[in-house]
Image (cartoon, rainbow, N blue to C red; front, side, top):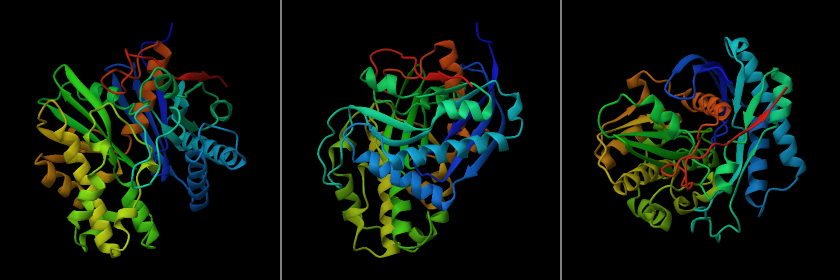
Length: 374
């Protein structure tokens, strides 16, 4: 019998590949969520390059397979996560770790390579997160819950997004139909309207902007939207990028970071390209909201994109909704996804669902994850 509440570490390495996020919370895996501490452990340029190269290799594979480059990325990634745990204040109190790992390929039932990438449909569904949970358990001396997504995909679900259950637990006392929008590398939306709810990936969030900025030697991301602010939005490019089947589909649906590319913006100036890709992200949010069965009253935004005031303003303008960072509700936007995987780890111990028909498209609420012991 597991304790009703435990102190749990959640670890997240997102599709932006910028850092390992580590959060410490006390939770029962249901409505009790008490944040305790948070830290991020940035990746070095070499680590980031290794992980991105592993994702490039994995995305080209029809099914997961052994590869020396991916194995080395997994080893480096796991040690970086152990370092994040060691740096987390109060981590010695934790009895359990939730370890998402790093997604290197995500091909759920709805997945496709977009027309912008010129590819065809994937052969069979799978989702692939690298990270050696047994090694992490030995390095940290704690049991590690991992492999959160594969059972969902095996049951016919999307395997993503998985944070919506945590969003619903956090937001259970909020008024009005509300959307919780995560702007990481890929965007995802959780919408809540009384007893009705749902979730899905909206499209690229920061990933294309980051790729564009890096291509033009302007850093790893457009800090504060400064580059885009000096450019002009090419609405014809935005319209062409948005004119594909994915955006007309109802959720649940999910994406791989590599399903979209910056190809349509090539030929634009660095400033105009940044502005246009930022506007495209905002347009994907408008399209996502247009397909909902309810009209939301506001958007609460988490993830790195909330630090970009131009992107936030564009989303508000295109959707017509008040758009605010989750900090307005007292939540910790930088920590939220790591906290979610601590919460999900506790749910695994209790045999509670991680995915629902409304969020990942599984036929019924479905537990998931596996446990590695030290």
